[in-house]
Length: 370
Ligand code: UDP
Image (tube, rainbow, N blue to C red; front, side, top):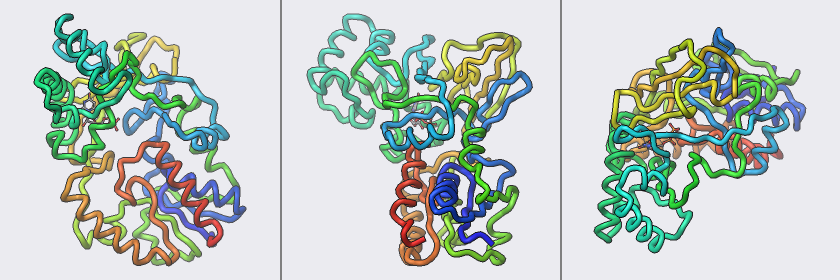
């Protein structure tokens, strides 16, 4: 019998399992519904030896030194800085929208005047969420905000969420702010990289410990009545845990159409966004994350939809209300022997580093009572 049970072998669960096994030197049992570890970070090598991210592109980036140091114990890195282009008005332009994008999409004289106004108002190098820029009073900046909103955000969000940008939590579009600089990277975090052998190998290393047992292909609800444990860490969907008694929380999914081509390179950058054209949101060319040498290349076109795996929580008012009801139940049983953590249990749009930081923090705060 393991004293500690973890539901889910994604980032949140794997980090907790590792800490219990390595720090407390106690036995841990992980129960995972899928037939693989790694959650949505899972990757595999296709027949041309190209590492493909099964659930869509994952680019590790963080400002947390402790998260970077933690992961670096388990992997070497490819130092990759993510750059994304957006296909807008027939041109490939930098995304997030930055000062270069401004000059590429608008006539020079107009762009020069708007650049000056932007910098006078906000300051060079500032990041402005589009929903904030849209509220600006100045009529020229208002005109610019409308262009950015229409060309970068509106149609992309409709495809991505089936909703308008205003209908989702503002923090979501703020992930890709307007950037008042010439920095054309998608992230500005201090640490940015891809695990050298891929994410699945990284998880294997994190979980490589004789104290950790993993049971794949096992649904928690089928075994929950048989389990004996001291503490349980639940990283699955919170509504499922409570048998959906307050209703179902919505998730957006994505169907990824993977295609392999006999060509060395398919597109200029690893990711190209298509806000306004076609039915997909973006195309990822996976070999560009890993500098893989091959005469072939594999791409994935993303078609978001409501059916399929849980990719993103849909953070609108309706779901936030439902989630709060579940969280009140969690608060009630908090003093018990169960912890709820991670993207699905906390219904949060966590990046990978947030998930790790949250697990490290939880372990740190509860280790004395474990
Ligand atoms: N977004 C957009 N246009 C873009 C890129 C992003 O409208 O070209 C919006 C969209 O609502 C998206 C959100 O910004 O869901 C966050 O984008 P991000 O690339 O961070 O999403 P993820 O990589 O998590 O899919």
